[in-house]
Length: 334
Ligand code: HEC
Image (cartoon, rainbow, N blue to C red):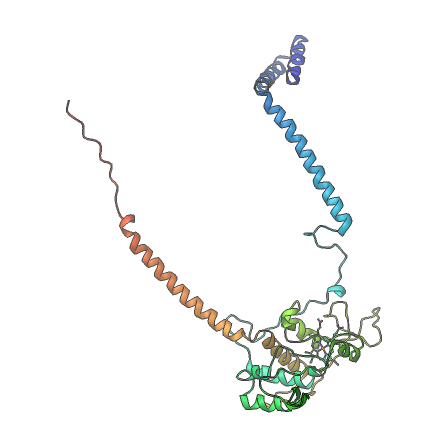
């Protein structure tokens, strides 16, 4: 019905005497509209479904808008949209540089001499505050120490064991199977000893921090005086790599703090590099083996893949090389 209206209007226009060209244009338009109108009226159900689909579209839109309004009212944001806030370098921490770790490449293993030095730094410096729960003395064997060396290190530590025949706990020297001793008996003691801050367990710290080894290295070597305008609370230290800038851990590594048995000069960056290599090993003890196995797997599977291609070509060659002829039916003599 409605679509016919313009046609009537156009007719009256022609009566009014429009110029020839416009008349033609109008005519073609009118014709196309008539066609549209006829096809539309022929299937009025299409129009109806169009209308109902529009209604459903509106209701779906309203429903979604309502849900979004309700959800954002409750939770502040949508689940897949991160919270919007003004972030600054100080909030996220300065992004660490990218360092050329000797174990970084696809085929590279850890520098085990560095792991050994790093263990020394951990034991002499970090172990005063940080535990390394997931590493046992036996884990060092074959990695940085011989079995005898590791056993000797373990025996320097007293462990509580028991109960004995009288039900008493007793002290005994450590064994290879013991785990590295924690510096504090519990979290509360650790916090009390560090002005309320908890020194995290370092076993997986390289994996647990954005930037991994680069971050921890930058953190250890990145202590500077706070820039003008930045106030640091009493007992806190300024480190631009630490998110927020203020960290409870003070700068620890100063040149010559430890004495390496292999004669490497113990500069602060050398110690940081060694301890980070050690912590990287602690977080990924399977690292060397993983890369070796990975290389084996790549070689093996690519060889198998090549063989499988050859076998496929061999099996398919009969089909691929066949020729199909069209043989016209033989005309039958009548
Ligand atoms: C005097 C105690 C003390 C010593 C020694 C110490 N730390 Fe810490 N460390 C802390 C405390 C406390 C924190 C927690 C800092 C915070 O949350 O503000 C911390 C935090 C850390 C963090 C985590 C930073 C982060 O992103 O959350 C790393 C990594 C770290 N220390 C590494 C080391 C290494 C490596 C050594 C040895 C060279 C070491 N620490 C020695 C007290 C210490």
